[in-house]
View (tube, rainbow, N blue to C red):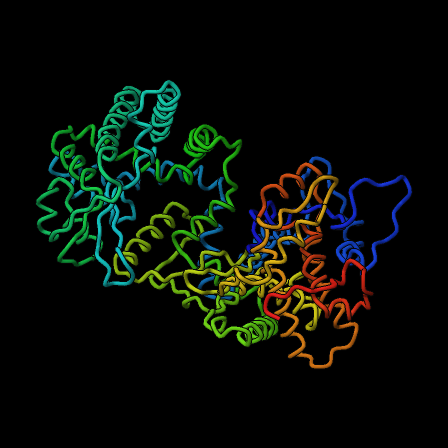
Length: 610
């Protein structure tokens, strides 16, 4: 289970009601819930009183509040890095961030940046100059026509040439005739014209230049549309270079300092069409086409005229969003894609000190040990705690200038492409360290706990029982997914079917069974781990364990949102996630001296791994 924005809708959303108490209330204030009748309400009474559901909001949750701190935490860390970078990685981030956030500098330097980026076009006098011009663009970090990737991992992966995406990624936008598609294409043409105009192209050339761009892209789109997505062609580099002579594959790879005997071409129809255009089109039309490809790549980071045009079409029209992403989010996305590991490396170092890492590691290892005692297969799961399994970060050979954002982008793109060509790009976690996440990935058999997750309410205010009831139980929930337990605890289905969360609204025990089983399994593993770590815990420690689990799920939710959650979510509502599994744990009833017949003490407790 992820502590993500998606989780806020699917997992954390829940109405703070007892599983057994209907929504309707009398005018008289209800008595405070008791531990043995509604532990969810008992444990979360203070939070619920202090966090009423804001007007116009469907859901508010404790874990959602933790998620909402992501942006605040990122901005705080960036401010600290900008003020006093203390490593090469932090100095890279500081320079890149300073240049990228300075929109006044972007506006002032836009004309010069455009002129520098378009400089290779000055060499395009004849059609046969296209290979040289393409190589010059690649040498400064731009790939207007061709991109290169490694198929497979490492330097031994096959080198492949792949198409550079069209301005409109879906070829159907260029070829379909529905009125709404043609209207969209007209708005795209207006966007092309806006970039051409902002770049200083003479007004008399704007219309023919834009027409050339759309005609060329339409021909390419038609070729892509007629070819299978997985089409490929393998041959020697020399043969491919002769086949697509107008593209200069050998020249481009030489400028990128890449040697290869063989080259795979993905989507060969794209390359065949582009090569034909390279011999049939006039140099002027090719210049216009390449000019737009460069401007379109740089537009979000150039002056206001470019940024506004890009936002108006791609954000407002194509995506239907009211505003562009904030600069902070745009820079974060760029670094995560092109320089993977930089931000995670800094976040892991700054958010997690040695004591916190050791504390969390001891809990996770204890939970895994407890699970492995039930089934050895649990022992095969790897634990990635705050980047512990990720390769060391390296940006060797890369430099940034705090006054030159476009230059930084070009250097970054070139550095990234050269690393990819050499097969030296290191794998990084797909889960950002800045986002609180506890998640098991079945494909890699890895349980990931990000740096941002190592805070309240997953960790207690001090080492102890709360760590096991929070982080331990939640990681146990995820760990339980590593072994098929579908034949276990099937009685949880009928049990949850009996839970009414609002008048006439019952939990779907069948749909929520896998996650309800994981909740109970996680608590079983964590309770065993806690008792192994503290063989003779006192009553206060035991209560703190269960309190920590309950506090994870504190939530407010509107009746309409609750109904939608109950009808669609694979998870039970919040109160059921607390009261349901805890009522099946004899240790809970013993800790809170719940009597037979009370709702938090099952007559015939259901176990998953007990």
